Image (tube, rainbow, N blue to C red; front, side, top):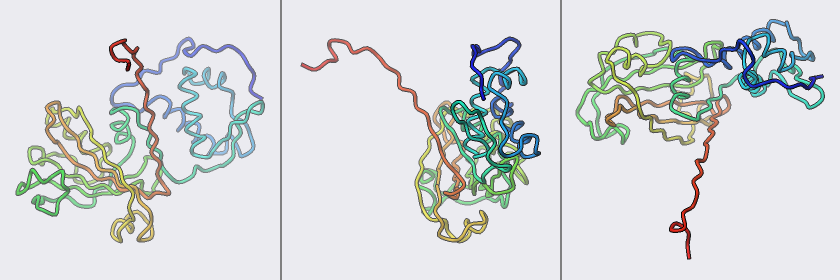
Amino acid sequence: MEHGGNLPDDIANTDDSVRADAIPRYLALARSLRAEIESGKYPVGSKLPTEMELCKQFGASRHTVRAAIERLVRLELIKRTPRVGTVVTASRAKQGYELAVGQVGDLLQYAATTRMHVLSRDLREVDENADPVLHPYRGQLWLVIRGVRTGDDADTPICYNEVWVHPDYRGVRGAEQDIEASVFHLIEKQFNVAVSRIEQIIHAAALPDDIAGLLGMPAGAAGLWINRQYRDTSGNLIEMAWSVHPAERFSYRMVLDRTWRSVKPSDAGG
């Protein structure tokens, strides 16, 4: 049973700061706990330590520990029950990937914690059959990189990727085989340009034969198609990327905070 007790959000000697090139602290904790569950340290039916105990073990804040626990819940490894505790319910996580987005940094972090296996890299002329986003660039030769993306702890593909790189950056190096982070990370590093805005469009559609085969899914299975446009501080397009996910292996969670403001008398009706 989890015992009560006052525990500040930031206990002594905790450091939840994260460098720009590091994974979030809560994700590191979740991975450690997942590894311990899968190794048998916490067998099915046993209980994880309390939040307070985990805070002390990892030297982490309560907020960080809760985020790590929540991730394990979504992986269906554990279940939290009031007055009972946190019980291990499976020895292996469900196959799938959840992308939680609240700001641009979350998308950048997603790329940094997954790996893209490059299938092909070639130059293509933008023509009338290209995505409408690219129509202003007809006649130009863009670098097209195709591949499949996986998590760093799973072999099951998360998605199919097709990345169109603006001609100014088509000489990007490091995108020939496996890419540890993402193409735009390589571009930023090599060309000293920063992604400041990401435009995103999401729609559902069936998986065509070729993409379904790469993802190990039957043709016609449900898919989630995400188109992202990465732009610099002046709004210029750096790259356009398609990510195609099997619906049963991917979920997209977005949290939007509302900013409230007081209503001035002049704003009120009447």
